[in-house]
Amino acid sequence: MHAAVVSAFDRPPRYQEFPDPVAQGADEAVVEVVAAGLHPRVRSQADGSHYTSTDELPLIPGIDGVVRGPDGRLRYTILDDTTLGTLAERTILRRGRSIVLPEGVDPVAVAAAMNPAMSSWVALRRRIDFRRGRSVLVLGATGNAGRMAVQVARKLGASRVIGAGRNPAALEALRPLGADEVLTLGRLAEAADVDVVLDYLWGEPAATAMVDMISTRKERSDPVHWIQIGSMAGLTSPVPSAALRAARLQIVGSGIGSVDGREWLEELPQLVDAVTEGEFDVRAKAVPLKDVEQVWAAETDDRIVLLP
Ligand SMILES: NC(=O)c1ccc[n+]([C@@H]2O[C@H](COP(=O)([O-])OP(=O)(O)OC[C@H]3O[C@@H](n4cnc5c(N)ncnc54)[C@H](OP(=O)(O)O)[C@@H]3O)[C@@H](O)[C@H]2O)c1
Image 1 (cartoon, rainbow, N blue to C red):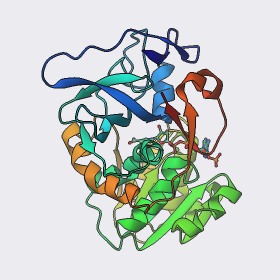
Image 2: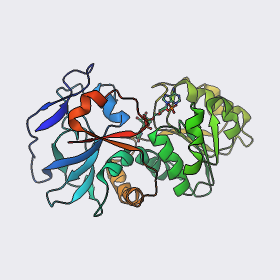
Image 3: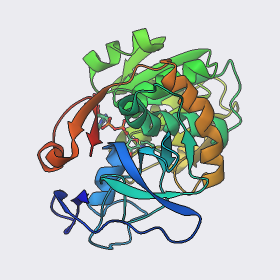
């Protein structure tokens, strides 16, 4: 088969021939990949920087996607950690790790939307006791996951959604998606009283935001749940100790490992329904898998979806 193959972590994957995957046992089946998203997590898998990386090469990256199951039906799957990812003509489908998609679904939209949408969906539903009527700040709201987070928070009943980021034009575009307010990073004191922060930035901006918000928060003993989801601005953050003492700040992370695989799968049906019923604005750009090397470093606001 053909696949995007990583042979060295300092080079983009190359489209080349690769041995077909082989199913091991009754719980696995070889399936055709229909569409797979080029998410930041896929890039960090391919350059060896993701925290789940095992340094094993060669590697076919790709963590999820739409596949055609043995019964001919389209399924969305999230793979286990594997070196045989979805940026290939075929991959391994494991029992219990996929859900059947409705007839007539757009596989490109599903492949583009599920990973970014799941980040906030699972964070709000599985990492904290989120109730309707709570207010949510999305820190780093202008990327694919942040834009989805604004829409997901709204769908899950947030009373007030604030989008924050560094890009004023992209922030304005969040209003039609459900953001009540948009703030550049220097103005986060104005969001001091939110109940939940969905943080896609981490790094220095998160630490500065915590100080700005906590020092101006009116009811400091009211909990503020800070959910660490992405690290676009830095893998580490210089969080001052006082931030944790001066207010009821509760920092948790949401991602692979902090939520059980079974729980991720339990959340998929509702989210797939929302995506396939067009409830979210999805930005997707379909590209043939053979062009993977050319688009690897492309700067685009759309989520690239590779089609084998
Ligand atoms: N834990 C999970 O479950 C999970 C799931 C999906 C994604 N994630 C993580 O979430 C993060 C975002 O993913 P994504 O799919 O939204 O990526 P994306 O579509 O590439 O968007 C990332 C956005 O971050 C903004 N950005 C980058 N550096 C920044 C900085 N220094 N300060 C402020 N904004 C900055 C950029 O927006 P502007 O250019 O407009 O500023 C960029 O568009 C990644 O770290 C990803 O790994 C986590």
